[in-house]
Image 1 (cartoon, rainbow, N blue to C red):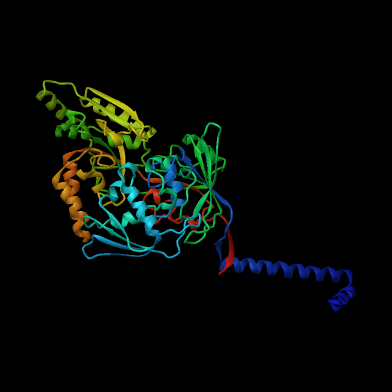
Image 2: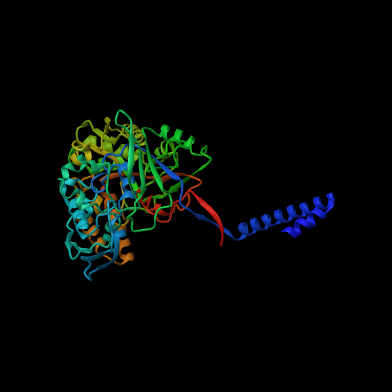
Length: 533
């Protein structure tokens, strides 16, 4: 260094300028070379950091996925609890398809450090099967016997083979026995754990904030140190709660939230949200008006049910209310050809006239029960006008509270016609929604439908391993149900997810239902660096 300094001192002023200029050019060239190498051979790598805020319309009420049907509860739960399948090291099924042997991963723990064992799995299944739990999993776990083999082994015995039973394992969140085991089911929603849960998922509860009126404004999660998988990249995951879609839109505009998902039409134009992406994902769902023949005698007449179905202008509903986001549905079989319209008001009017002639021009009155959801209420109003135009004398629209624990129409079955949606766990398995054993709550056969041929086919489909045979049976089943007109099938809607451009790791390929949104959340990231490959 001293020699270089001595030489530099001997340079003339011009030589010094040239030397320093050469050094500067060399440094800039090296910087440019490094930049080109990184640009050509570099790749972005996720790193821990930042926070993510998900927006939800509504409130968390009971963050216990075995009991709650609330959207906010469900989304929070999917980050805090793992489904049974994700806890398994191995599983096997007996040759007759009736016995499943499960083995849990070794060393599983709850977020409070307690061991997660087969006792927790059995407790969860027994809770789901208990009628008093009113669990959304009640129907899919009926008749399943759970037996403890060891601390990590469980044997499940089914009454009949079920080719779709693996879906039950993938969807059942496991809850801790050491938390809930000593609490009566009726009191689960009264305990402090309803908002401060203990789980086994990638995140654990940290805290929540609420207004003076009790409205919970935000809910904060942090990585679960005992999670059996990879640690999430995002250290702080928040949920913010809103009262309307307009509030959500404002929050997106102000970049106060990073994501928002909806099973319904979004309700605002997303094209102005330049720093967000809108994902539209097809779902195995359909909306229909279900005819309850037990409450309104006129609905027992098959011609009346056919007329009511023919009298609905589905294309008008899709264009005027759904913004052309939906597609017409003709039967409960997802994917069936729905290219031609089922709207035929002339034939519908003729059927109504025939009925009135036979019954001495008796007045026909029908009441449509509909959840307090904007697009469904608008749909009900359009159907009302359609039905009145074909000769139905009086059509009433009644808005109902689907979450009322006592008077919910899902529980009481007290309705003439119910406008509602069915979300299928498996597209081939119509058993939970149309088998006669599911007519009463908490079953999901909302039309009270009963047809022995249909029942037999649903049972055979569950017991058939050959895909081609199942599809043939499914097609026949769809025809039987459609011809009986237990419901007027309306439309299917995609699932929407709006998220910030900076989100990495979001995987659409495994998103088969809204509950799958956060399936790989531990791979989500918003912080990254570029490194040489």
